[in-house]
Structures are given as C-alpha cells and as structure tokens.
Length: 620
Image 1 (tube, rainbow, N blue to C red):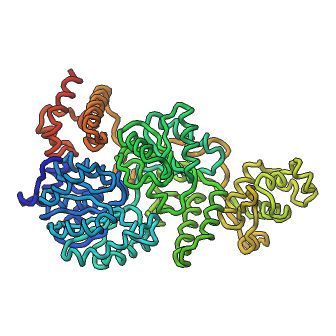
Image 2 (image 1 turned 90 degrees about the horizontal axis):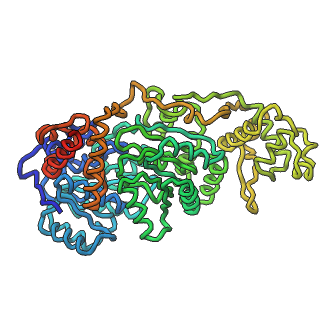
Image 3 (image 1 turned 60 degrees about the vertical axis):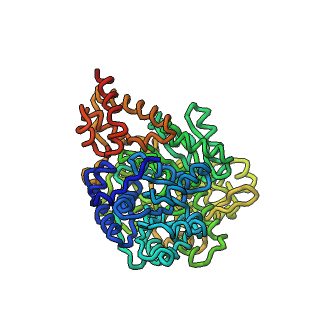
C-alpha cells in the first residue's frame, strides 16, 4: 500500500485536492457544489449517470476532512477497482471483504487501527458486524458514503434488505456526514432512499441522466444470433457485454460466439468461483473480450472502454436497463446499445409478475415499471427521451443520436390489421401460436390448418395482401399493448385475447397506431450514428495523426506491461483518454506532462519518466 497522504495537514481546498491528487483542472457539473457541501459536513444524495464522476463527490471530501472515510459498497469487484485506482494516485485506501487475502486483511486492519487509511471500503454486512462497528467507533470517521444507494430502496431494481439497516449509522456515528450515491433512481426510489436512511434533510444533487455518447437501439427479436453478430462485426476487437435472461442461455451463446472465433466467455452466479474470477479478471485486464452474462455481472464494473452492451432478452424495468447499458462508454467515447425484444419476453415478464408473492403496493410499482419498459421497446419517438422520462427528466428536444432519431420509424393506422389478427386468434379457439395464426391470415394451407378446418374460417386469407413478417409484427405489438397474451401449455406458446383490452379494438371503438416493420437490415445497421450539435457534453475526440497513433499504441503496450506487473487493471494506471492526449500533445518534460488532465502528482512521480522514455523511443 502507498504511504498515506493526509491532505488536511496541508490545509488544501477541494479544488487543490482535485488538481494535485487526481490531476483534473476543474470539477464537472454538480461535482463542486456536492463536494463542498459534504466537505462542510452536510448530508447529500448525489444522482449522476454512470461515468459522471460520482466517486469524486466523496473521495475529495474524504481527503479534505480529518479521519477515515467509510464507503459502503455492494460488490467486491467494485471495491477492488476503486481501491486499486486510489492507490495509484497515492491515496491510502483499503477494503475489507470475504475474498481478501488473510494477510492483506490483517494489513488493512493494522492501517485502520493506526489511523493511516484515507478511505475504507466495506460491504453493508461487514460494516454492521459488531467487530467492525466497534473498531470504527474507536477511529475518527471523516464521512460515510453509501454507494449504489438504489439498493436501499424497496422500490429499486436491485433492492438489498441489508442496506435498510444502514439507517442506524447516525446514532452510532453522530455528526458524521453521509453521502448516498446512485446512477439509477426514479423519483419514488429517491424519496425512499432518503426516508430509509433518515436523510430527509439531505441536499439533493441531481445531474442529467442523458448520456449523449450512447446510441440506443431496439429491434424486434427475429434471428437473435444474426442480429447480435451484426453488432459484433461493427465492434470487432473491442470489449462488450451481452446480457441474457438465463444462465443456460449465457453458456449457449458464449459457446456459439467462441465457435465463430470471437473471444467470448460466460458469466453467471451459478458458475464455480474460480470460473467467475477468471472471467472477471479477463475483462478487467483490458482484453477485447465479450462477456455473455446474466445481470449478476455489471454493477460496479469500472472498465471505461466497453464499446457495446447488447440485451438478448428484455430487462424488467427502465432502471435495470439503464444500469446495464451504463456499463458502455464510461470513457465518454461513442458506444452502442442494442435491445432485442419479442412478444414472448413481454408475456413471460407479465406472467412472472402476476405470480409474485410481493405486497400489492410493490407489485403495482413493479407492474408500472414493466409497462414503461415495454413502451420503451415499441416507441416510435425519441428513445432516449422516453428513457429519461422514466427518471422524471424531460429532455427538451429529441436526442438526435438514438435509432429513432437517426432513422425515424414510420407508423400507420393499424386498427383494421389489429382487428384481423385478433379475430384470427379468437376464431382459432385461442389454442395456437403465432405461426399458425399468421398462416391463417395469409391463407396458407398446412397440415395443422387442414386438420383443424381453419381453411374454412372467415379470417382465412384476409391478410394475404401483407407478408408474414408484417403479421408477426402486428401480433407482437398487440402483445405489447396488452390486447394479446402468450400462455405456456405443454411446452407450447399459445396466443390468447385479453378480453377487456381487445374488445374495444374489435368493436372499432379504439384506434390503434402501429410501427411499420423494417423490410431491410435493421435501421441501426443501415445508418451511421451521429452525435447532435446540442449534446450536453462532448462526445468522441478528433482522430490521431498517424505518428500520434503510433505513440498511443506504444503507450498502451507500456501500460499493459505495467498493469500485468502490478496485477491491476490497465485503466487504473491511465485511461485511454489520458494516453491519447499524451500522444497528441507529446510533452517533452515532467512539467508539461503534469499539465495533462488525469496526471496527478502521484502518477507523475511514479510514471512520468517512463512515459517520457516511451515517447522519446517511439518518436526517435
């Protein structure tokens, strides 16, 4: 562990700490106000998007206030990454968790007892254990940070009951400021966080959740492997995450990709611990690997250069979706997201919710979020705007960088088409799947059609003026609207009407607008994404010259070697954005190198001469 740097001994202000320790010339957005408030001893709830700089809001105050800051964190991987990054900038940080090497755990304990830790990361369970509380009660506590604070809320998408017990902290540590931080909380969840933690008087710092560097796209699930491969071809040699709804599917898809010579590895909670650690280590090492995972992988992943996140199954809420796509583009560079969805996903999610044993109020809230997620998949309007509305944020204008903005979807009056589809489902006895119903609409004879005499129905052939793809789209959208349900019976998926929702459509009392189905490759594939001039923050950087590009690659190779020697992720040494700026500026001395954003005093002293040597050797 690096020697502790007690910044309060030098009487430094927050901006001085930011510049000296972290190498940033100025705070961003709401950071400065939040940092000053917590440094002055106030409680705060900080709401910022992933990659928005939430950690600065407690790390800087921790270094400005006397004592040790305690950071409550839900995941071991998150703790380890944060500790590694802080040690790189000369901050005395440690973590206590179940997978820590015994000798390292003893060392962290000794450093804590001696008052030599700036920040201590712990899980809520570890923090609230009698031994840890007793040990901390003997120390001066600078502040308590509660990261991923949405876990506190019973309305949140990753509720963890143990987080609720953190409400006792003010009694155990009176006068110690608390800061709760999250990237995903709608208004109801925010209110519950404050109430559950007894922080009703806390100042709320809420930044925009808009991520202009993320290209949001959603497509009906048709041939998911082919759809995924189109995305992967655009990102060959880059890192990404593919989320699946089941453990078996992650393994199946990872094996399929590996069979196509794509570096892919499965990750889910049921894997042996060694396999999970190996997969996470490959991802953290900077390899261009594709992680095919359940939601067990994602929260707390700090790798900045994830260039895409794909969902092969629909998440159950906008909060879950936003949390997961937030793993892409943490470095501010352009990144793709792709959501594949289908009527079966929607119907399955509704069935699971209907069988939930949760209290009715909670089920109602979950149902509202699920319906918001379904609406998000089928919207023909700005997809980013629809997503942000789920968090109570009103984007003033269409984002200009989602699939619906880049290539607007066309809608049509689908009332008559909906009536034909609903009638076909009803007249076939609500005992058949989509393929059979579409065959009836198209007037296509098959063994099943003849056996059940469905070629004699009035609806047989009423839809032959449209292709089958059109009718599959109509049925999928009727499922999304709730007019059609999908029931599982003996391994078959059968279409059934929701009488209350379907009746006004069949009677012509309700007009239905439907999206046109794309006839060619998906719109996101046909059109290059662009970033609008009115974006809230700069996205991407100018391409490096050929010579600067060579310097950049040389610096990346040096960083990879250094990271391997230290057994840390490359990005905790320097982010790509820092190396890119170094390559473009080509500093010729330590003073010039120290002016690069992200090169603080500790990193300058530790790596400065090596970086300058790489520049000289590569250029010369």
